Image 1 (spheres, rainbow, N blue to C red):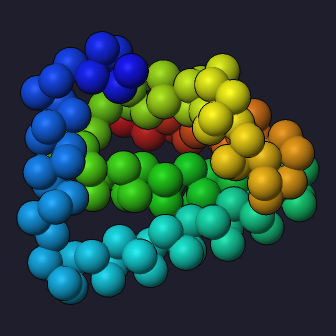
Image 2 (image 1 turned 120 degrees about the horizontal axis):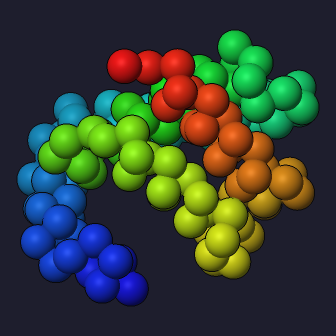
Length: 117
C-alpha cells in the first residue's frame, strides 16, 4: 500500500536509510521513540492539541520521521498524520495510548506544521 501511495523508490530509500543506521543512530532513534510516546501520552492527557506539550510531541514526531525520510516536507507530514486517523490500523496503534490519540496527534501535527517555515 505504501509503495502504491508514495512510490517504490521512496519506500526503498526509507528502508535503506533505516537499515544502514549505525548502532549510535539506532540507539538515538530508540530513545527518540520513547520520548515521543511519553510526550504524546502527557499531551493527550492535557486535552489541548495546540498546547506547548502537544507541539513538542509533533516536533518529536518530525524528528522521528527524519530517521526514515531523506527530506522533511510539511505537506507529507500532514498527509501522514491524516492517514493515522483514516487508516484503522494506525488509529488502533495510537489509540492504544488513549482513545482519540490518533486524532489528537493529527491535530497537533497540523498546528505544528502551520507554525514552522
